[in-house]
Length: 407
Image (cartoon, rainbow, N blue to C red; front, side):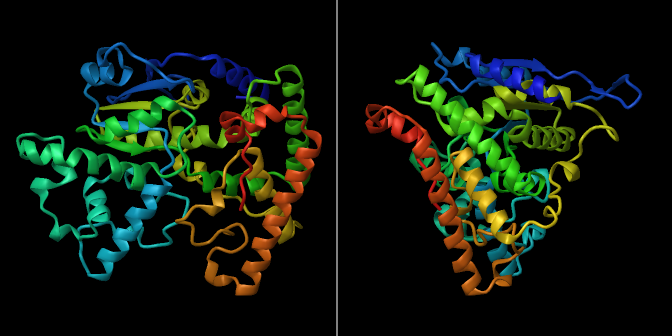
């Protein structure tokens, strides 16, 4: 998809009000014909607006479960909160020389590239281990989250007692603090994980997106985007002084070909990786990604693969460390997030050094100071140009929308 197609798709996606779906067709083969396959993929388009249903019989997830009985539910949700927990558990088991868990996960817990698609499958035994602080051999499976959905295995009273701890475990160890833009997905992730199907957290890790953007976009380009977004935001408030709008909203509306394209390729590649493992896969993605995934639904060797979608290009030649830090500070403001300040991050400067051990304590302090300096510099530039009504800034919703991501 080109820039204009992306912009038109984004405008239409913003206007979407209901969950739409389609059964994905056969992939396009390299010769232009259909690439026949046996697996069924049901793709759902989720709007940002909250969804309300008269009963669960009208819930798209319930309808799909009834009709297709999917083995895998693919949800566009950032997997990093869960991956950090899973990798920590794997590390602890490896230290005890236990063989049941994936040894391939024995590397930095904050590495933003999932090793395989199944590393992003929510493992309920892992959740049990984390919430109870026990190893797998110490768990009572009759009272485990892993058997929650099977009433024939678990006593009814144990089932009832586990509901609240189950919800809390999902909140603490899967959802994290950064909720999805899509309200329906925030609700669905609880329903899906507490069901019988495998749940795949299929979204692109935000850290991976930032590393790709930082090594693809020159600093001057990012500065120009920032200036443009501030001007458009200022124009919006001049025309609509009481309607809250964030910098992220403007960034995605005018630059989806920059900020959405890597995510679309990743989602498509991840889905193509996971699809052969199930007869039916139910997929829920944000409305802006609904059409691009269909466009990139091309079979090998022409279509995007997982290696390509997760590739981090080398840094732009002649850019200094300070310039790379400045770009990441700008991305935080443009996308209204605090990516490098997440509590599971061990190295907040992976674009400078692969491991925090490769940086001297003085270097870390300098980089952190420079990141904060750049953030405050652009916050000041934005605030000097942005004419936001004082009443809006005092309101809870407006303040939340315009909250500055501090390092």
